[in-house]
Image (cartoon, rainbow, N blue to C red; front, top):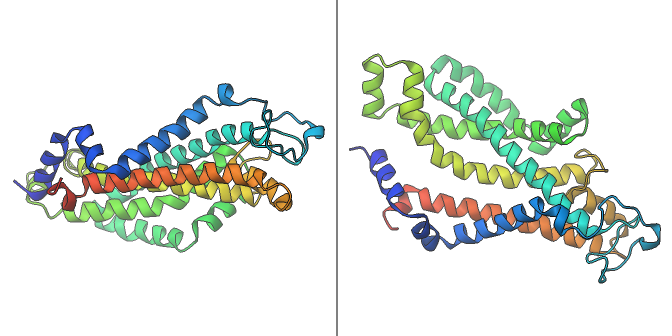
Length: 289
């Protein structure tokens, strides 16, 4: 039995409770992410005031019993806008994680298994990786226009090379395994080898990588919205709320403070979840668990 099969047999035998008990980062990160997801789903019920309602008399209102997080430059409720902003950030994070992993998985599988394809696709990936993610996203959004869909597409393209290189490295190591060489020698169809022998072994590292992509996408979306290249100003997001409050930070810090805390809380939770998953499924830790 190969080492890969040994690890794959060990991990599933551990219950979810055992994994969470052994890895507190996984427990804490999951709880924090679930809180953010609950806030996003329940925004219509948790929000106290319409996030788009303009009330000039409440301009720069300090936090009180009615405006829990205060009012912004034109009197909108910062609390409601922060709650609704969770929807945008989580939608971007999830959308980028799914799109980036899906495209990167295809590129990585083909590059790792087909030599002549590898020389072409990896050069393209190298070119994309040479451009910082934010600059690439800004360039793509400037061509397509600012919208939630375009933000997801732009950030996804920037994340594809990292996923592709991860999958490619896994495929290259698996190609040397006896069971894969035996399948190739016996004339097993190319697609069957990928689906039965290669793909299942990429799922664990992709799951961990997906959490980091999620967190990175949430941050990049906030940065894009902060500089005016992300979601439209009419759509509440943590980035554009912070951007609107930066000019009056000295007299109304609450406009920046609360969405900033929400952003930090969510990103920290996703990163802790990723660290926990890495420790839970890393072969170096499995034998000790």
